[in-house]
Image (cartoon, rainbow, N blue to C red; front, side, top):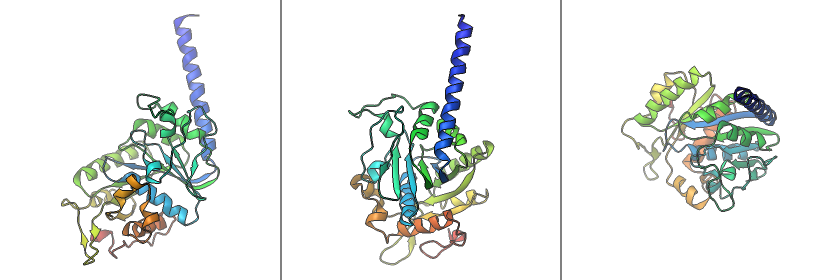
Length: 294
């Protein structure tokens, strides 16, 4: 057999393998009603804290929720929820997610990125086929919502997989500063060019309410990232204020919404969840203001 024939055979086998992966992925997603991929334009906007809080808020409303940590640059969701990731191989089928509660299941790509000694299995960012195989192997069962955490920025590997997931939509998390605003605009333009659906965006770390005087204080002098994005006709889901307890969850493994269910973060997330559930009248924020007060 010639070299060219060998190359054609390998290419044919690769295409067949990819087709099988996509078919398995689509089958596993077919019993999930709503799928959201949560992304951010840059690091440091609190995306993972946001997605954990949204998942808990949905679960508290007795929705069946799956929380997938596909952020292979730094999977932290298990630690934020006080869970230990299951160590497995990408070839393991089915991959059983960890039950945080009766309503919330969690699966992390960290489970297949390390062995029992905690050393990296790949040694470099996973390929599209690795990610696709991981996603398609998870046995979620029937879910109302699947939330997927991703690396910051428009990662080429995950965008490829995103196209393979039927009806998946993106939620973009920003922070109220110029860098976040500018990069978010570029991400939105890229998504539109690639015809990737955008469900909406969330402005995180949008000031905080003083516990003494009740007035909202700003954290950034450059104002909200929101006005420019709002003018791009992206649905605005809400803003989340800074909460001093939020940073503790990564160390303690206790989520803010569990420890402080009456906190400003919890209230803000509940308002966002109302919009996700279809309540378009949920236009006020926890301090009683509207978007135009930003």
